[in-house]
Image 1: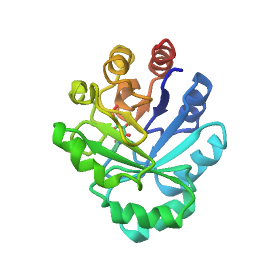
Image 2: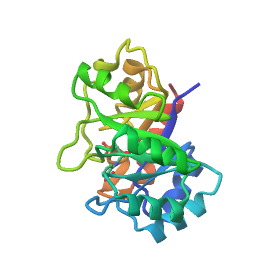
Image 3: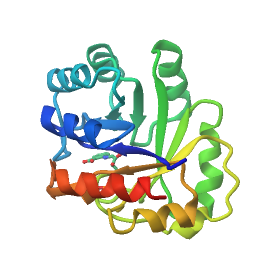
Image 4: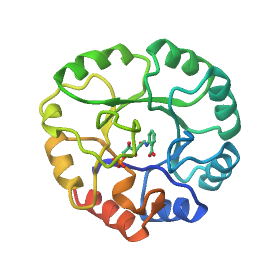
Length: 210
Ligand SMILES: O=C(O)c1ccccc1NCC(=O)[C@H](O)[C@H](O)COP(=O)(O)O
């Protein structure tokens, strides 16, 4: 079975409809003001509603306060909360107890030590998303990590990969890592925050062929 596909950083109803029509299994909405893909909570709730049950919807937060996390989850009611900052396992466990959503943790993978350090999320996060290490922003940077770090790794949690994936390299990334889920944002854009329907189609076609 081909990997699951999350198209992240959607900002418009058209982009949501396109991603779903073309076969994405997940979409991501970024609520983080410094991001060029930031959507306010009202917009995020509208996009979430539009997606309905056609696809799983992830809401991305980065080191959000308790207040903002509560407001965001209460307003948007996502299927998944994707924590993309330096949130602790303890905080994720609190959120997990309070909301009926899957908890995902993005982890910037630098070296084999990352694979040890992320074990602290075991039993708490429902999925680990391996991404490139944080740069100016913690995600959506179009940067790849060293896929060979995951070669032959025995995963103890559900997982996926992100970071610098494109229609041209996603098949190789899947072949090298065996990822059960791939996540893309800038690799299917014509400009930061603007999804390109042809690139989204090409990405999904490349994954479907795996
Ligand atoms: O997309 C953003 O702007 C963003 C900002 C801050 C935190 C996370 C963000 N995106 C998270 C994602 O899940 C991206 O899809 C992932 O980092 C891969 O991005 P890209 O390398 O552009 O495909």
